[in-house]
Image 1 (cartoon, rainbow, N blue to C red):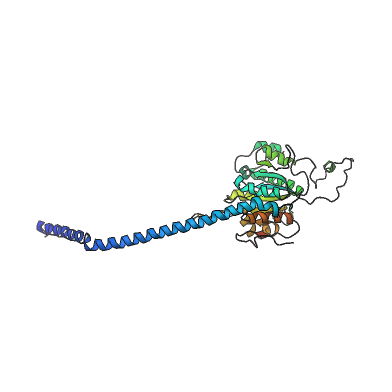
Image 2 (cartoon, rainbow, N blue to C red):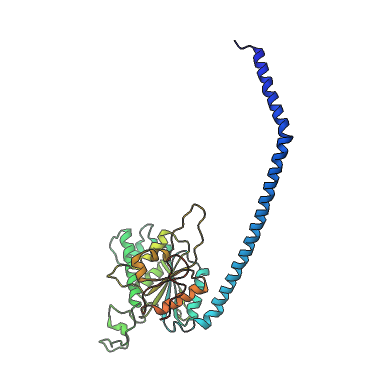
Length: 342
């Protein structure tokens, strides 16, 4: 049987061992460990200083490159891109999430290229149609008790029809209408925009704030858009889109063989790298390039905030209808920085 003396001896031995360990740790073992830790800390601090210095150097190079690029966009575009799009009506279609800092360089260069820039049609996130049914829009479209998907499909179909009609190549000879007037739209030809009249669906979506129009420099107050032929489109996707934002743009980029493709160039600015262990939603450019049907129909341009990207955009708009679709920039799927010479 274990007695009290055994417990006392055991407890005394434990405390003696702890005391010896503390004593040794505070002398020989501790000094060696501290020296190793000091060396490791000093080495780590030196590595951090070197990394910070390298980051500062690289950031200065990036800043200098961005300044040079901004200078090219402001000054170089006048001399290198002027008259590339003379008198061609161009409308920018901007996805939700695309800000003025991304749109301003694009629209400025389009204007300098001589294009008849009609403006920017900003697509609202209301076009997701993910809320309650908009009864006012139902009434405007003269639909009878539609479902949410039916309302969405009708709105997009009508908008796409308006874009497609205005995107047709201009007739070389416009026949005089039967009533003898000089207004080509007076003939009521459903295959041609009505001259001087904005498509009803555009007016409805503007009034209901599904889209917003920022007029171009040559668009007078109250002047209609999509009322003539020959339009070309620049579709601008967000750099960090949601899947719903991409769906809005994809609804305006038909990929069916029996539906004509819009005369459009699809562009986006550089996408920031994702945080660790987080995957970003692909841009509309990445989606178009990864789809065989879309890649064959629509020219894409990435890095549209750079001078090379903006130049590729202008050249691609000029080439629409004359060459097959191409993919330009520096992101995955690009075949070159700029389109080849015709």
